[in-house]
Image (cartoon, rainbow, N blue to C red):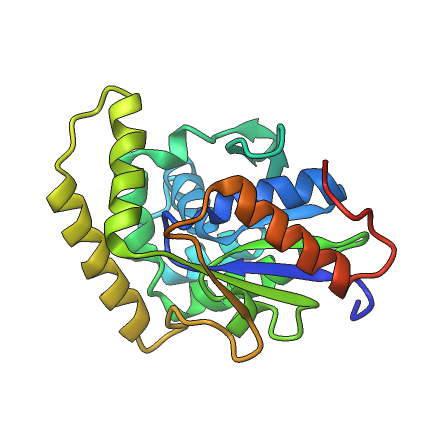
Length: 233
């Protein structure tokens, strides 16, 4: 398996990870893993099967056999998520599912089971892994590790724009405070803290448009992995 390339893209939300990863997956025709969505999928699967959120044993078994797929419709688009062959992309994005996922996520046995499940995505011809600890914990021997970052203020502006486009009211100052608080919590937690791998290439996207970031990362990919086209276009 070590000869199957892996590109990890880590970083906090709002840095462009999802867009970049969907672009890479579409360009290279590789497998895709959205690690953050796995906990939401697990929470949804538990609800559908009537499993309590405090039933560690049942949750562990469910995590080990979680039948989840990620499909990129087109470069730069939202990645579709399937549970047992059914699309659940919208269902896992609800507030209820997010809260359930946050309850399940700290359970050590669940995290261990999902770690194995994440590594099972490592298949030929290659894998694009989007998350927060892909390069540090899940795939420490990845072929190329990217860490995207951006200021909390810029990420809040991006989130504010997304919400407004969906017709959802939002407060920019509140979003910025929430993002800064989450960054602090994620970077100081004892299990898999949010941080760049020592050998990761860090890119600050605060003042970069998505096309520039895509071009920069595409160049890095081509340099690291021989035999690929020079661009993804």
